[in-house]
Amino acid sequence: MDNAFEIRQMVKGYPKFKLGPLDLSLEPGTVMGYIGPNGSGKTTTINCLAGLIRPDKGDMTIFGRKNEHKNPEWKFDIGYVGDTHVFYENWTGAKNLKFLSKFYPDWSDELVNTMIQKFDVPVNKRAKDLSKGNRAKLAIVSALAHSPRLLLLDEPTSGLDPVVRSEVLDVLFEVVESEDRAIFYSTHILSDISRLADDLAFLVEGKIKLKSPKDDLIENWRKISFRMKKNQSQFKSGVSFKQDGREYQVISSEFNQTLEHIRELGAENIQDNRLSIDEIAVHILRGENNA
Image 1 (cartoon, rainbow, N blue to C red):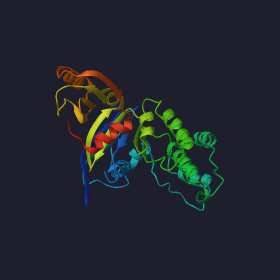
Image 2: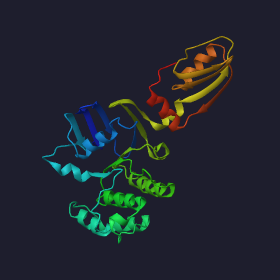
Image 3: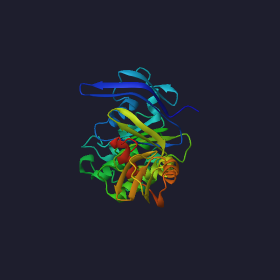
Image 4: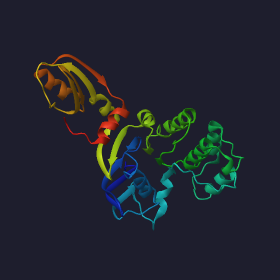
């Protein structure tokens, strides 16, 4: 089966910023969290995948079909939701959905009605009168109505209250229950990523710093506390450490390697704790080297 998307050596340059060369792929049936600071290139990546902007170099495929503007059929496999939800403001939500339906052969009014009821979207209101939460729900409905196999999400729940975010995530879970569908999800709300994602890709200054299964990060990254008589300033797979007399605290990106090393050094009273995805992301995005 083809990957949901494949990016090969993609480059997009601006006067003060360059994305890439970027190599990234996403398997069907999985969710990838795309994490990085503002200005790192996350939105540019998603916009290139969605065909909203053209890269300067490189190739992209969507389920095996080239991302080409002259042959746009691949766009039927994509659903897109950004942090800004664009509608015809004087039209009702229902009229906006009806208009969008004309562009998608696989649009399902039945699916739309199911999601409207599930989300309790007031589609008889004009778009400009909808709350931010209801605009986000309407955007999700419009993106999912044609059952896209690849869902591109760029900060889709930004500014939403926890209840609405939870409802949106519940629907996204249902999307990936089908093994031939996938989600590429960029967000600063790492609790959403922790709940939803299978893999994480960290983008810093236009380049992928690390790509890893989420479960591997949670398993391998630990905070290790111990006592040791001699002074030590380097630890295998340690990304940072603190020392207070004989007391040490090491953040490790490979727990077993660090544990073996400190035991060889004569460490005592060893204790370890797992880190949250938020904590791990901070260390990775800071670019901390092994300590």
